[in-house]
Image (tube, rainbow, N blue to C red):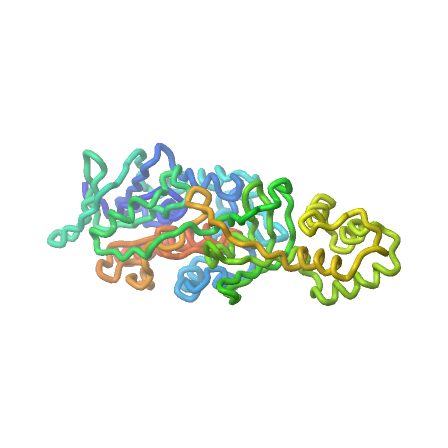
Length: 413
């Protein structure tokens, strides 16, 4: 059978593309797994952070240097449009104080079920256990021949929504990038994105679960500051994580120095001057004064004193200016050398992928073949944590569908 549209990949981008194709088109989604949306079910810890609150214009800065290039894709299907889509289908959303948007049920399956049901209502077939390992474009007939093991499919239009390389156990392992090379598609080198950072001589493994709100992180390479960010930092058993670290990880390399300020409410100079005054008047033990002033946990403060080789039970009247400076420096400018970065097995997204320079961004199709489309993480676009990547997956899926609808002369959905 000759299909009007074949979509490869039943993730959020592929499914949402199917939801917005004209139902008069003969369309099919081929998924390599035995069920759809496995990676979608994992997002947000299974709660599915579908998007972020606020103006869609504010999204652009969360996509690094790709923000301007994907602007029209996000603008034409915004976070407001996405929320309206789910509300119409009785999937209520809640907005947290940090701006993240989740289904009210906090169940990713409610989002996935809605997408699958909408595809089926839209007359889009879904076939599972279809591993696509080869695609050929027959110029003479202007059709794509899509090979899946012992069978093949024909299509006038092909949408690639195969994801990147992150969480390879879900089937998103990057293998399809190799198949795209036969279609003369340029692939920018890929690396893990939104990953934890492993530190040399990591001293905080026993503080796993401890987090710091709005910490400041600076990245130094060869004594030059190359990037900085403000966000939550989390100690895990083996690494630094949390949104502040994850969002900055695209700029971090092995050997870099991270300088972390766990108390980003005052300047270091101001804090030290105030603490000096407290030393004179306080009758507290030194560790209690530090804990109260910086609003830190006892376990963390005790660790800081141990790392500085200072007696935590010393009376404030016995504390020297040098000791005060050592403790304040460790809390407000903790230097940490990067040992390694998390791999694809821990990456939330993939940095790299199909080059935007080779695409017609007005259609999200190949500049060489207007019938070859791309949506979602397969593209060289990666955003910050907080729902930005899922929003791009949804927006790009709609963008491809509307381009196909317009090209084929069907009514836009």
